[in-house]
Image (cartoon, rainbow, N blue to C red; front, side):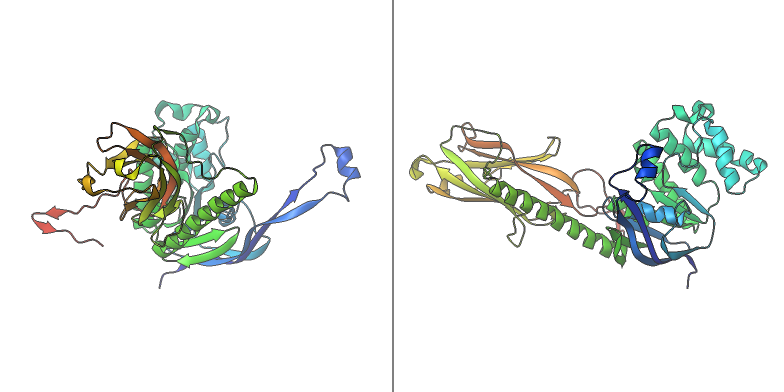
Length: 420
């Protein structure tokens, strides 16, 4: 059984939030007995253990207590209640530039930080070329830190932390700083440290990073531990929670709009001659629940109500759609004619419902838009066309990168390769 290197027992941390802070010494004396504040609990009764050589992922929304917990483990903050036991040398990447002096050069700050970890000048001199090379700072290493960008700070901080032979590494969103090549290099280095037995606690909003790196996950929400266990199980529970929370927010917005007597059936900017118009829509999951948040691969149906201003026997219709990224880049578009549907047998009423169904929409996590077009058969006349009729969000975990999850497999010398 692996040794426990971090024990967190019933840890609670609270802060005072002052509503009326004094602005002078005189006010401080006069209001000393009258200053009002409320107590905010950043952490409440948190307990879990971390085993030697494991990688633990902390997940949760902003303000859930993740960074506060890392600072307590790092001894830069102390709990109001509870205990923490740590066995081993800790290196942290929590706040950019923490422990660095802005007036000193990058090289001088390397000496200062490495000395804190017990390295002699001779030992630091031996590692200095490797630290500088990894940071990719080049000639800037001898410039004052106050001239560094946040990305340069991150490179220096990461480079020092991974070269001081720490037993435990604390990482708070540092993998999202810098260009994509440096991010990949950082991730590879963490893999390397993990394989060498370094214990790692990682805070990130990127579920794919949790999925790739972590052996265990802890989910915090508003300072309370919601769940802990297998990363995949915790991720799915967290993503479901986030999707439901988003849907509740959308419902509240609609309810507020109704209270304020706003026109909630407004579908967005459109074009067309108005012979046939859309009057309302719903974006449904497989249980016919109207929502704007879905998982990768979940069934999605766009249900549109229409009204025709022309006689049904004269209606000839082609229905098309577009899926776009949040910034308007086209991902995919098609229409019934392109998809070889039998348009001759299509019959419309004076009013009714059109459904566009995606049985397995494998978009990667992100924000997207749907556009919809109601035209004549040859798409030469637009009846009612929307570049953007609604937005939606995709949640989930994907090991790939980009926009679409594309099914694939590998063979070597004609043989299939098994997955772990």
